[in-house]
Length: 333
Image (tube, rainbow, N blue to C red; front, side, top):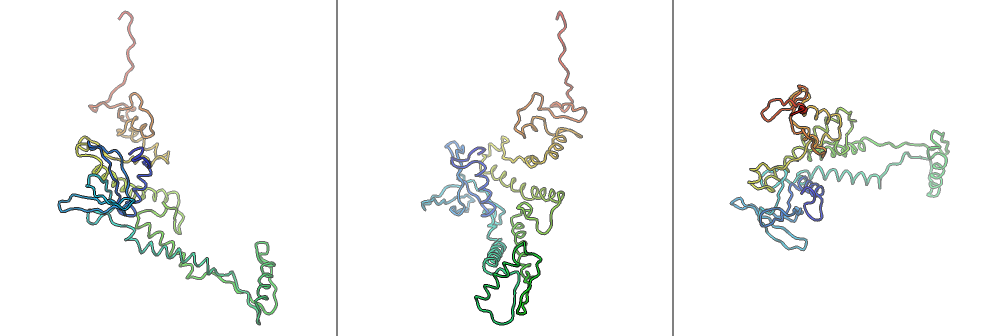
């Protein structure tokens, strides 16, 4: 799983697509190709639309899989890694897209309406009105004369002089059109609310420009309220479906390295590591554990915990270990 769950997908591609399925369809299915001894040989991610799930009266599970050729096959629950999103019946995840269909539909309709507005109904910058009737050829010549003498950046600010009591009426965007733009912005925020995503995470800040401090708090809120719950959901599901009871009893578990969130911020990361080593209180991480975050090899003596008393190592009994240099051999001994 860490490198390639199957022959055609990398681990990142597998987890990314699996997240798409859970977020958008409410569920994800992966077929577990197991050896006779129960060891998982490969995992094949399935299209949720091609899987029919059924829970029997004894709470056992079966899954009916539809192949690309249209054939179907029913397998037992231990052959499927089933990850579900927020659920009402505890069996299947809620279809978020269906529940948000009105918000998404309105956003699509607003997008199409705005595109049609610019494609077929763009308002002119102004209207030049003259007295009397002007045939089509005359209108074409008048429009060409205006563009030639007053159109473009080089002619900005020039005085227009025309005959036949002509009047120029500027056309501006009215309030209805402005509300159209506001509707599109609101729909972006509405869809983000449904998906439990901070708008700033998709590059949308609304009408307010976020400061560095506020943006930092928004990123933190996204990690706490969106990313970490997703991590915990996948961790718990992997422990249940990919590990046996015996393996869990031995202490095996699935976990995400949340310290990766600090990788992009060197200052915060340095402060965290300093505190973890015991900068102002007894440390809870060893130097080798911190080096492992960067995939650096362990160092001798790096498996001790430290307290801030001149960074003294603590032994297994909780007492300080005072490391002394070995005595030099005495002549004649």
